[in-house]
Every structure is written in structure tokens, then in C-alpha cells.
Image 1 (cartoon, rainbow, N blue to C red):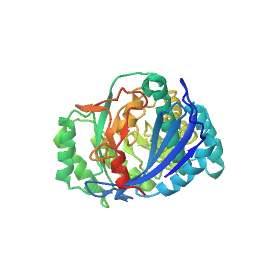
Image 2 (image 1 turned 90 degrees about the vertical axis):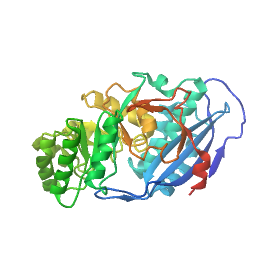
Image 3 (image 1 turned 45 degrees about the vertical axis):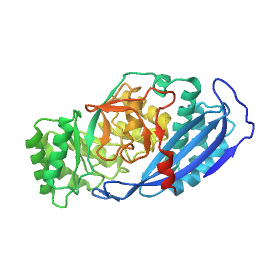
Image 4 (image 1 turned 180 degrees about the horizontal axis):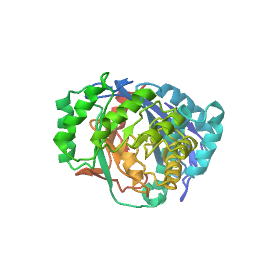
Length: 376
């Protein structure tokens, strides 16, 4: 944990300046055991937390996340970014541009945007608290609630267990469901999807391949899955393969979802212009926070593409309340940050719909004691 301070100690009103930055890391275990898909086995979520101290005595909190590794690297970069922001006025877009220019020479995306995310979310939170307004209303509220879809990290579950999971989401009022695919034998995926369709009828269903196929495998899977009328097939190819996704999209009928492993508006625009994505799944903790996300959402809106964010439902669904072009936010079953013990206070989920918090800032409260127990 590191604290950097200007040392002025002044209390001011209105929009403050950043007086100090505090950075902490935690490795949070998955309470229901490891998550797995075609290419991952995850045992914990690593969280980078940034607290920005304003010279008005208020504190804004931001965060980013990785699956099982990388927080030390992100934290090290955060320690280099912090001194460039201390003393600056809390203007999130200005701070974002300042941080991005500072880190760009060591990489425009990935670790750099993860680190910027934590500062940016903290800046928005501090601005909202300083003005006494929720972040949604600073950006511009479009709606008061956001629909959710049920998402399972369930490739390891039996077909019976996956069927019951999707049935439960439908009964609980979620707008749609997403399940993992990528069994060694494609026909096993087909059988599982057939059983889900039989159990829940026309309930909207998507699948996630987690970058696990090569191009011929993806073509075959799209062909075999067409009978199930899927909402989208997610990450059929490695996320770096922009041209491959565009080529695939020209050959298939099922929409493509991706974005959790795409990090900048420039990369997303290449996907948009190539026609390789239909559901835009940017992750607020990976794309440079709220500012980066809003840039991507605006670019997607000009192409009539819906934002369908990845992970951290409590923040993602909140920001969707200020985004015109949306489909749903992702409720990861057993993997919301409330389920993981990271948040102690958030908005409320009722019948598959999320109602964001209304407190000033982003309104999300970390469980500091729990994170301290798992500090890196």
C-alpha cells in the first residue's frame, strides 16, 4: 500500500484537486471453486484498488481486475501513474488523457488500460461525491433500471446441471442466458444445447467459446449451432484476430459477441468497420474505466451496435443506465462482486433487473475488511 500526498491538507468546495493516491491489491478466492472454459482455469480474481483523496476531504474509489494473475504488474504501473495525477483537478476525461499519454509508450492497451481503469473509476466517484450527484446523472441518465442475462462458467458441469441452471435463470426473470461451449467433441456441445432448448423453449440463449477455436472449427460450430437460433456466439476466435472475425461474420448467420479481451476504442472501431462484432462486450475494468467505456459506446452507437458489457455487473449495469444503445448486462452466476465478497453495498437486483445505487459517486462500497484479509 502506497500513499502519495501533496501535503496541503486544505479543504475546498466544488470540484477538488487530487491530494493523494492510495493503491492496494487483493487476491479474492472463488467461493464455489475454480472456473474453467476452453482455455482457462481460474481459482481467484485479483483486484487493483485505487483511492483518490481530494483536497476537499472526500475519497473516490476505483478498481480493475484480472483472472488469477497480473495484479502486481498493474499495481506497479499504477504507482508510476499516481504522481502524474496528484495535484490535478478532478476532471475524469482530462485525467484519463493525461494518464494515457504517460503510459502509451509502453503499450496502448492491456496492462496500461487496466491500470488507467482503476484511476478513472476513482475519479468519477470522487467527482460525483464532490458534487453530491450519482455518476449516472453526471453522464446523463437514460433509464432507471437495466435488464440482466444469466451467465454461467459451466463447461465443467453436467448437461443436467446446465439445464437446471438455465431453467432457474428463466424462472428468476433474467432476459436471456449464456452457457459455455468448447467440449473436445463438438457433438457433445450440440447435445447440451439441444437439451437446453428442449427445457426452456424459445428463451433467448447465447454461447461463449472463449477464443478456443481455430477458423475451420469455428465455421463448423456455427453451422451445427444454427439450429438453436442463438443470440450470439462469443469469442469464436482469438480476440486479436480482427480480420478473422470479419471473415467469419461474412460466412455465418449467427451474430458474434466479443470485447472482454479488446481494450481500446481504436481496436473496437477496427472490429466495427470490419463487421466482425454484433454485441459489444467491453469490460469497464479493462478498457480504461468509465471514460474509455463511454468512448466505445459512442462509437458503437454510430453503427447501431448494442453494448453488452462483461463482468463486474454492479458497475457495468449502473453505467448502462447512462448509455442509449444497450442489450443487457451480464450476471455471472456466483461471480458477481457481491457474491465474491468484494462489495458490501451495491444496487439491487429484482426479477432479473438491476436497479443501480443512487448515492453520490458510483454508489458502490468495497468490503475493506474482506479485501484486507486477502491482500497481496
